Image: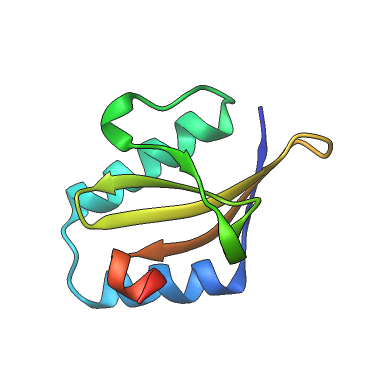
Length: 94
């Protein structure tokens, strides 16, 4: 099991999401994805989990919902799940 570490960027983005009036079921879906990752399990294919490239090499991204993405890193040496950022594709990469 991985220990969850939230970056300041993730905390700001998550707070912004909640203030935008995001529905509770979406935050529940996000938490479910985080829980699966923290257990070291693979995500179902519907989440489109994949490695990022270029300037984001070393990070992973998955689709919690069609336009809600989670960017994260797994540090296997220290057993950490690092939550880097969360938001829409245009917010994260636009």
